Length: 209
Image 1: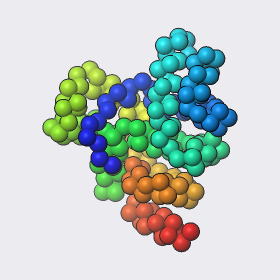
Image 2: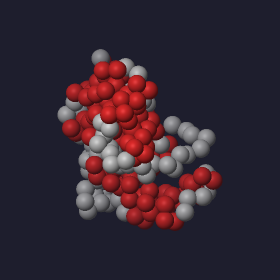
Image 3: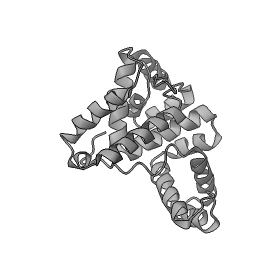
Image 4: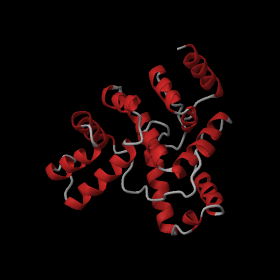
């Protein structure tokens, strides 16, 4: 996954689990994202305190979920909570190239090297490396950078990929989840803390299916 630019506007919300399930359920009924947006905002389906907040969170959720395949959206509505959280992490990584690169270059690399502690320093090193290549990263203020790190680490905890002590947890991908990700783009398996052996096992299983 290569981006000409990296969007850094991912502080509107973390994984947004409950909001995403509401929006995904409405999309199954209505079939069009614009119709979903109109109903969510008009009826305050997300139970936000202000209209602006409702619009902002709805826009953020839709911008992520619309990048999932129909099969992934179906599993998001009907799967286990573990599958749902991992799918929402997939949606975030599809939406934000910066987070995708962090997941593949830092999170998984540390995991496969048996370095299971994700620290603030790891994030700072990654941020500074990206700032050398992307002007939009370099322009981020220090206060915003800290907020982005806080949001990203919370996403990882909500997805079940990081514990409260900062230890990286293996992703518990079910066979059906691994299959639908491979059918979409095998590169997205690398956003999860999984071993090379897991990758080969899923690839073999997918080839036989």
